[in-house]
Length: 333
Image 1 (cartoon, helix red, strand yellow):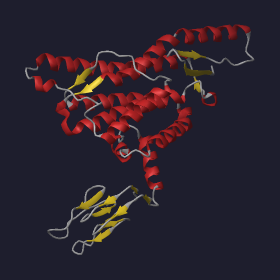
Image 2 (image 1 turned 180 degrees about the vertical axis):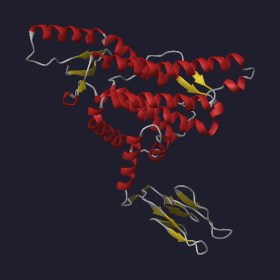
Image 3 (image 1 turned 120 degrees about the vertical axis):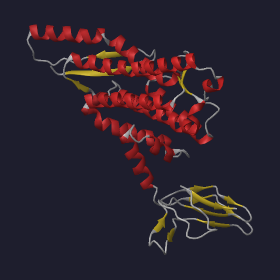
Image 4 (image 1 turned 45 degrees about the vertical axis):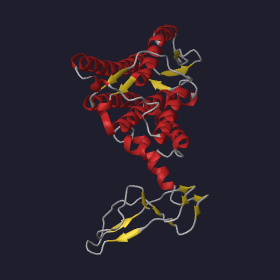
């Protein structure tokens, strides 16, 4: 029976589910269909609460200082997974009626709620692991956690805030209900959490193949929101194995930046600034070191500074004393 599942987010954060019943059926058939529709509507509140709780779970988790250098990348992974979940919800939202999702049976609504509930269970399992770790630990240093508001690099802080804002706006929310936060102290359990949650989000997406076009449109909107951020390229790396649609869209955006754009740059005294891709031939191995597209703004080179910007895919020092390439720039002072 061709129902359509429609999710709409209202100002009070309650979610409603409605079903559109086909016309031209018998009275008995219509009554049976309306009974099934009523079942969907009755389940709306629980589905709404499940989804809201599911999204909120991403907000309550903290990461322990044992994560070290992996902290910022791990937090970005959480942001990307949450953004993907919000994209799925937006794609089936009532606010885009032309993308109403074909619902084969009322059981599909139960499947959605079950998958969302399983995501919540993943966070609950991770929290139980956290509590056991806290109970066994005799070292207060092991229980120290990072603060996303103070411990992120400025560029990643901006990206974190931007992605969080995108997810909240899709729910027509500006804040998250404050609840007690909890922390994961071991990266292996974090990695397991990410794998399990992403798998369930993938199941939600595959359940409704009709939303693929809308998903592509929504990820394009995300790219427009974050493409100007300094940490844009880092999102691509963190999104691997989490959000292939986002990764491919970022790659397309980076490729579209093939024409370099330089403005408001100043070179003074004996400074030397080089703009453009650079290729260095390795005479011994016969290989090239080639740059890739980039954009530089507001470069100020003072006396004695030699700056070369590019993104070589490979790097090799031909002889001792040469400048070594980093992933996205070379500087010598």
